[in-house]
Image 1 (cartoon, rainbow, N blue to C red):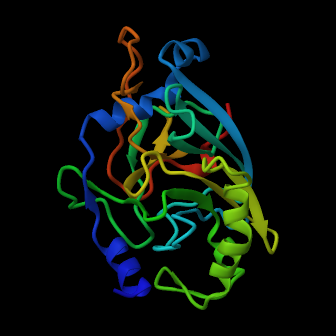
Image 2 (image 1 turned 135 degrees about the horizontal axis):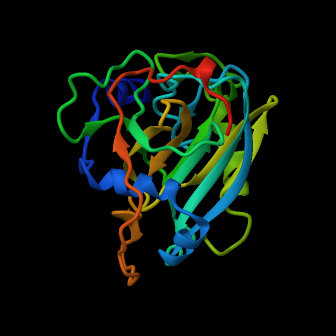
Length: 263
């Protein structure tokens, strides 16, 4: 199967794997206090910031670059923090990758669809996300990939990008002989990409928009399945009642960006 055909299939057909309730409990960790994060055995790291010149966002395995269609909604153009959440027992496997859009607390969530796709009509458990074929995912503006050539139907044309993968991305990901990949941010042509390991490796991982009580977008998150109901899989921590995340209406656009301010 060609790269173009595979990319189109990934965009055209949502995957089925998400538990309709458990994923909300994983996303609820963004509501926790630093003390509760530590008690659960979760670590939060700041990877750095990326610039979104048009506000459009792509989440993709950067080593295969399948499905380069941006998500259905845009952020205001600007710089945004990338944060990685880890289970302390798996310090090299990000559990959640977060692109922080505003300084607000997300309490409502819905699946992030590609541009031109709708959440309406999805069957229970179906959703859109990141197809991982090389154990890695990323956040980037589509302009990053466009520095290497035109993108048609979500597919990057030409081979210039894959020379960049071999000559730049691989050395940055594996700077030593440990075999443990490094998470990093790099550039090409003045455009940023944040690259990080994808939880348990190859597979399909769902991405979500998080909104506050006013419907303002706070974060874009990819859940890599390392947490179970908001805890590390092998956690011995007492599972005390904590904040609950809630489903947002399955609309491509929710909330009024113009009325949303940091707080």
